[in-house]
Image (tube, rainbow, N blue to C red; front, side, top):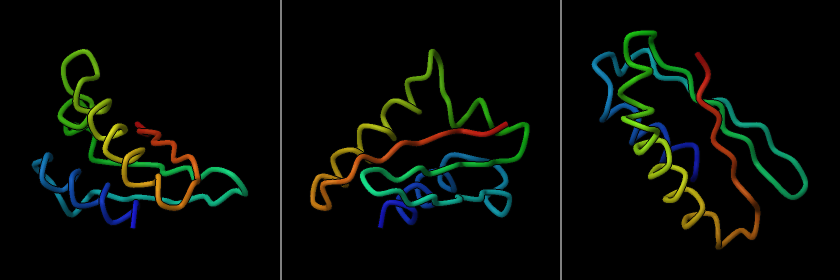
Length: 77
């Protein structure tokens, strides 16, 4: 569910939605989501002073409370 959430939000933010990729790495107590977007769109996903990235991470943590796992979002360049 978290992967689809990040895909949806990222595709809505960027100019090139076809370039958005999310890789999911499952661990015992945590899940890592690696978000990769086209080079010109990195700023749109991060936002000024990281505000958009922080908001997406907040939404992820709220969505992951059901599973009890910690979800970490990494934005790759």
